Amino acid sequence: MTLRPGGTDAPDTPAGTRSPLITLAAVAVALAAVAGAATLGGDAGAAASAADAERAPVERSTLVCPQPGTAESAATRYTAFTPGGAGDAEGASGLSPLTEHTPGAGFDPDEDSDADGGGDEDADEDSDADGDTGEDEDADGDEESGDDASETDADDRLLAGDLPGVPVTDTVDGPDAPALAGTADGALAPGWTVQQTTLVRDAADGRGLLGTACQRPDTAFWFAGASSAEDRADYVHLTNPDDGATVVDIDLFGPEGRLAPIVEEGITVPGGTTVRVRLTTLTEATEDALGVHVVARTGRIGAQIQAVDTAEGADWLAPVTAPDGPVVLPGIPADAESVRLVAFTPGESDITARIGFAGPTSTITPADNETVHLRAGMVESVALDTVVQGEAGSLVLTPEGGTTGPIVAALLVTREEDGEREFAFLPATAPITEQSTAAGNVPGNAELILTAAGEDDAEVEITTSAGDEGGEATTDTLTVPAGTTVAWAPESAEDIEGRYALTVRRTGGGMLHAARVLTEDRDDVPMFTVQTLPDDLSSVSVPRTSPDLGVLGR
Image 1 (tube, rainbow, N blue to C red):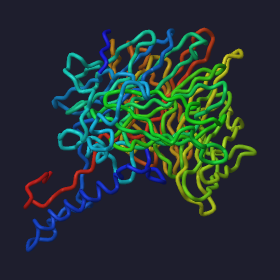
Image 2 (cartoon, rainbow, N blue to C red):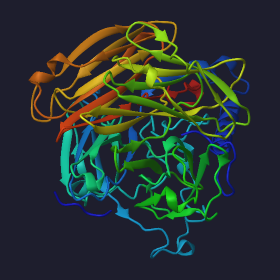
Image 3 (cartoon, helix red, strand yellow):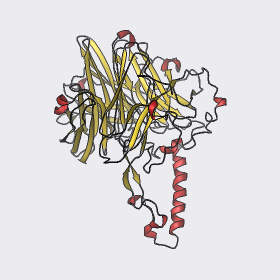
Image 4 (tube, rainbow, N blue to C red):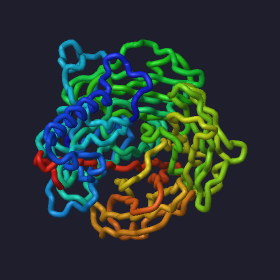
């Protein structure tokens, strides 16, 4: 294969950052004025309202994938997939390589008109006013705000696809796999997902199975579980898919609050590039557990953390996607050896949260770990090994005693066999309201962990796609009882050839959270990685408008 270079809102908005709340509010006021003018003297009931909104498939999606790393013994496998259901509609998808940029090397932000916020004026209008990380797609087919630097001719794209329901795969061996960015449009946009899985064989390179789902770019991200300890090498990967440069601020939080930075200046990320920043270059403090806040002053970026431990392997740490309680962290495998919770609240008030483990029969409180007290801005790290009972499950944090506020939380989970250990991260994740997809599955090595954390059962439909080398798609239905977790693997996987996708749809009932566990035993090392499955936001609310406006009228 030839390669060519190509969250939630912060409590305190840094200087120079445009708030999506302000931008979207201005748009809302303008639309309200137009609608009001159109209906003056007419039927007031014809005016658009939120109650008249309907769901429509998105027609454009953007994803960014971090640079897999620089290990000589690495092999990176990519799988792109869009669930079927678009009928005869047409579309296309693909990703292009981005250039790696070293901060401070060969770039003068004063020479780029966008570095000070002059460009990509609408890039952050893709974000929801409530800070969700996803509805940057366009329901009516207009292009997204921002100019995707990754958009090149179709011949230059990797993982190019033109049919929903068909996995597209590629593999890069060695240290040269780049960061990627690209788009899907038309029938390929709703639910488009790309899985990036890297197998590192040599312990000197940080051996392990590193997996991540490529993410939608956004303006801000929260992480829990990073580290600046001597035996860890953690890097924040910043990926800019647009033409204009941006400046990114990274704040670190430890057990006593925000850590003093070595330098106060932000990190410049030129358009169409990726930047790796080691956490130990940002602070002199040595902490086993850190909270991280990443904010782009202008435009949008992707942000993920690559964690490498000299003794326990490596994996990707994804940002949390649901910081408001009850907070659910799905995906603890049945053979977990240890579980550690890292959590903090970036709000102004302390929060006491009840700890629950949703297992196969009920939600229980771990012995000696009934609650965790989170002091505002201060990171807590709690060993929860008592939740490990040989059963798959999910952790649930429920604020109690009238305390409320955001909770940034993740689990560090390890597996062990004959003294060999490997770890993975489980960030707090948003529920599946409609559907979510896990791509890049290997027959016999993939398992879904589904949790109904609320008071009602969740009704679920799971579609197992054909493999990229053959097989037939199948659909199964199941019920996840309230307060429990179900571990599920497709029986049809033995008839699938190559890598396949699992699409989870909530068809009724209560709240549903999910994760996918990938395992691979290599050289007697129990390697694994877990990707949580928030809703893919494959549809957006489209308001009906007055017939006088001649718009939508669906």
